[in-house]
Image 1 (cartoon, rainbow, N blue to C red):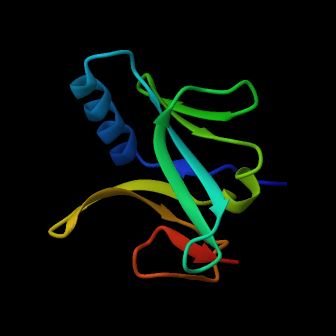
Image 2 (cartoon, rainbow, N blue to C red; image 1 turned 180 degrees about the horizontal axis):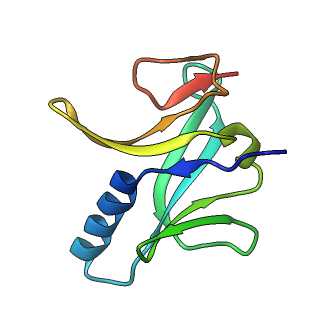
Image 3 (spheres, rainbow, N blue to C red; image 1 turned 30 degrees about the vertical axis):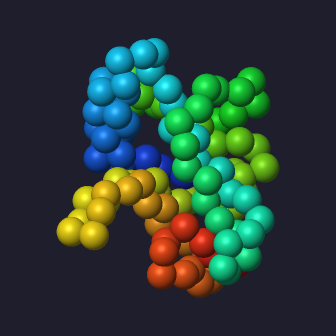
Length: 109
């Protein structure tokens, strides 16, 4: 049984801030896994509209989307938002990754 990723309240709150500042219609945060990057796979995190076959994780009127191809790679992962001196970004804590690179957007299984 695959456990879907979890989204922290901090990530949903940051998405709400982004959508409030955007002025247009609210967009969902898409979290996908693609081949490439320095470790074999990389995360693609962007604002997008839902597709019919997406897993939709929702809280407080905000949505995070995961496509069915990416879902096995993100099983039981945690999607969070991190704000540090070097910058702020959405981060993925992925228990399926055997290693990751320093940038935090690339990983291997």
